Length: 149
Image (cartoon, one colour):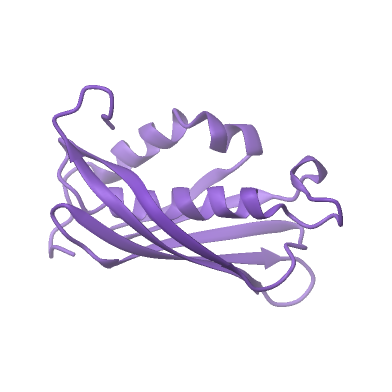
C-alpha cells in the first residue's frame, strides 16, 4: 500500500456501498473503513440460511467479496474503480451466530491488480468464531463509464 491514503476514500467507499443493492438486500452494514481494511457486519436472518439453518455459503462469499473489494478500493486513486476477477473461499465452520463480521485487508497492493484477504467471523455466545477465509484478486479499472465508483 502507498504511505498516504487517497483523499476522500472513506466517503467514496460509503457512497459506493450505499449503491450496492445486494448488500442492502441481505442487511449488511459497513462498520469500519481504514486504509487497506474494511469491515462489514451482518445480523443473523433466517432468510439467509441454507437447509440446516447455517448462514448460506453464498451469503458468506458475497460479504467477504465486498469487504475485500472495498479494502482494495481504499488504496486506489479516486478516478479508478475495482472489479473482482477471482476469489477462493474456505468455509471452516458452520455460519452459526447472532451476527457476523467480515473483514477484508489488502495484502498486495498494485496499480493494476490488488490481492486482498478476508476473514468471516460468527459472533454469539462466547468468543468470535472464524467461519471462513477468502483470498481475492481485484482488477483496478480506469476510463470505463459503466464501471465508476
